[in-house]
Image (cartoon, rainbow, N blue to C red):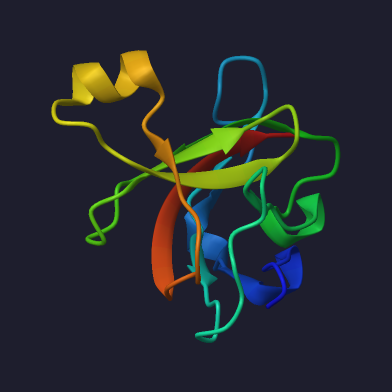
Amino acid sequence: MSDITAANVLVTQTFKDESPGLCQNGDSLNTPSVSIDGKGTLTYPTYGISVPDLSQFRLKFGITRILISPPADGYFWIYDKTVRTANPVAPHGTFRAFALNGGAEMSGVVAAVVLDLIVIGA
């Protein structure tokens, strides 16, 4: 089996989802939906699923922050700015325990999921 890549991540964003220059420092705030589909065979890479190119989020210079609303699949998704990946992690009991212990890194086949994001960047 091979790992899922950014090519398997579809960003859906309409003009109404964009707020250019809305943030205090002049960054834009966008609210796209992202569909991830492992097609029943693709697996999680070690460092997470690569985030698509900046142009997919209608940004030119960089992503400052991505906030991911928890989907109904029961996992927390975290954006790792250092390696530009999204990582699903299973919670350990309470959210506090999850935050302190880092959760458990996912492995195996990637299930289809749609994530609602708040993307801040320029």
